[in-house]
Image (cartoon, rainbow, N blue to C red; front, side, top):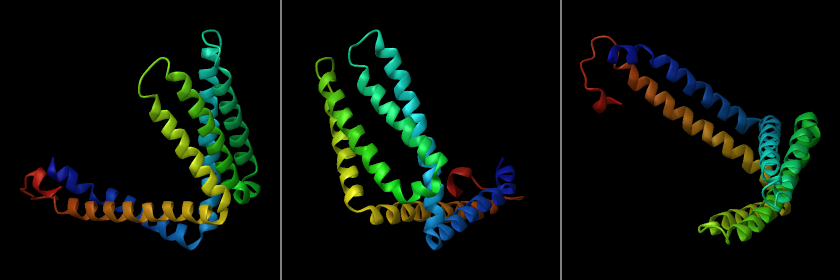
Length: 188
């Protein structure tokens, strides 16, 4: 088993190398990183919106409070489609879209928490999540340039950190190649 793991070291190291290269590119060309982020954000918000609409549809016959989930879902679908079909225009408006989405979602999360309070404990967690969403939205709205740069840097530094970890792991796995007589727990 150690030999099998040792023979695959290069796959892990290659993943690490690509992650490091991506991190360097993301730092060197943050605009390209933001363009990719716009598309991924659009996909995420669209899927989140569809799921919220499905939840609202399921609540329609059972509860009178289906409309907040529907509104959040519809906003998610609209913002997701805009981000996907107009990525260049969205790149300049991304922070505002995220800020608007975070504020509206936060408001509806707080409203939902107030309604959940009658039925269960722990609803304060949803309210705290809503307050954090609103705070994020306000910060991004007031400092959009910082928001774009921060998003790009976070992605870049994550890729660099993760890539270095994978490179180290890959080269450590290389020592487990043919003839390795080591216990797995002490080397990995």
